[in-house]
Image (cartoon, rainbow, N blue to C red):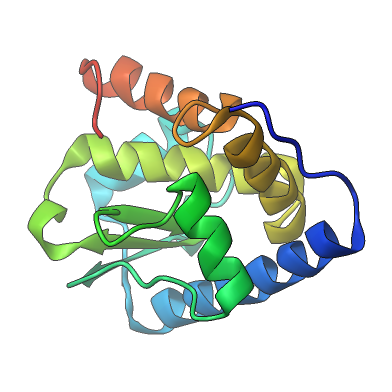
Length: 162
């Protein structure tokens, strides 16, 4: 895929919608989720999460998909969030589908995204880069997604979690 989202009014609107949606998902997980266990805290440190004590995980039947039509269309076109999505990092809130709840590699992968949120300075800067990569390279081929896959493989000794 060779499309590019340019800094346009349309991209800014999508970025704002996505930021609000991710921040809402994070609030839900921080309210209803559970803290990382000792093993997960260790993995968060290995991944480079600066504040692992802030992370919560939530066991959920289905990963939510944004309801706003434009944001949903972006998710559909990039395949970044679909009904088959098994986990999602909303900065310090990690949602994991019930049927994948005990997968260590998946948690490490999502913790790598948490570290990226921190490194990039928050939800909006993370999403600006991540959304651009999803459009430009296609999910899961963007550099940020590939970094999370590589970190999980290195720490957990697997080749692919998805």
